[in-house]
Length: 75
Image (cartoon, rainbow, N blue to C red):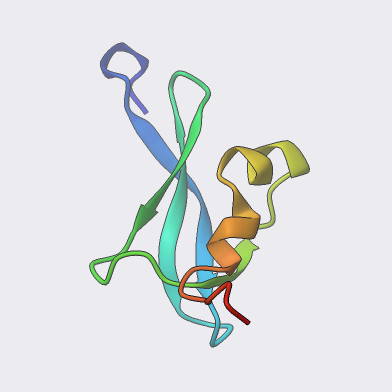
């Protein structure tokens, strides 16, 4: 990671609902913030993060919303 350029490093994999596919990554930027980057298929539902992140990091990337991608609120 190059702090002078504001670069980031992947710190965790986002695992799809099949329990094994990596559908994206969580990046930690040199600024200390966290962000999600998706694979070429774009946003997909996430079942877990490997390795697991702390509650504050999960809140920053809105993990609950990542698990609901594609699900309808209409019931």
